[in-house]
Length: 403
Image (cartoon, rainbow, N blue to C red; front, side, top):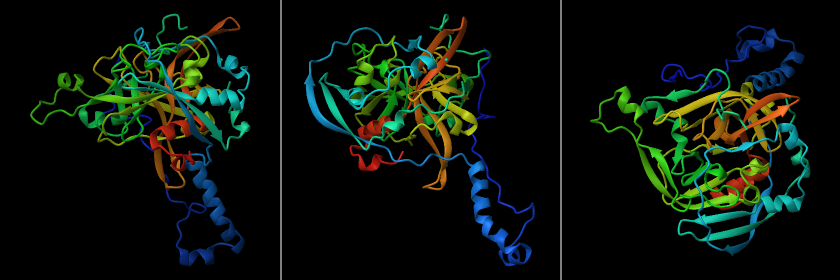
């Protein structure tokens, strides 16, 4: 297996550089433009420039998101922490299978988005939610491009993953937002005290896993000044661990189990006991695959087969449903929970922004017309999920209306 480094070349990492607009290939000044161009063309220039900029800059969609608010909190019996964490989730339900499932009603969504909160002292509560400003048309799946791994390899052809080496890269944004969970999964910093990860890293669909009560999040530590810089040292990563104070898991995951169609709600948010010092990734509503730059997604995580390394990968997105994004990004167990992100132009802030648009969940294969098809699957951050996760982070809905 070839290990690649991004120290010299970081494909999929650099942004798009937009060159200055020219008219008919000629440079011009504002004083001479009127004498060179017909008045009608002058009126069209702003429109031409907007269209040119639109094609050159993939832009985050402007949209208002609904509101998901807690309505009632109920006590639940202390959970039994049974079984080890599963570092991957498999499903035999193809994209077509997901698309054929009945559209959930308002009451279904209210149940799915209600959530359990596990506290570090073992205390468990269930929060019932209300949904406001919800448009049922949001449930329509985006336009699609085109549906049990026998070896559970999650690698498609040539291994396209890149091991991130050198502390200058490991501790720089966006790689620095990747964290490791004590249960063996990965996660992404999405707030000053918050980590987004996969629900199956904490709960197997029926019970909380061993280690969930004393869950910790690991941050890569910088090398000491007197520590020599060599490959053997760089590859031995050390973590600073912070305990988790609260864990939120949607009931849409808990009502299912790790082997059925419940991948739609395979996400969880962790609240740390103390604030970290790093820049975090912003949360974003997932655009359709067609809107992504080059239809490409990317994520970084701690794959088990590359111990002591942070692994980055990028690939084109494939098919999609309203809740799931299918792709062939190479991954191995341990990468589950990684934040899938994209970099696009933010029209409000007039700058490029990276945002987490999904959570890497697991692997699935299906036999379609006698041919085996394999996918790696990410849970998309839909408007409703954005509203819920944002509320968990911000504690209010006012700051969560624009995705």
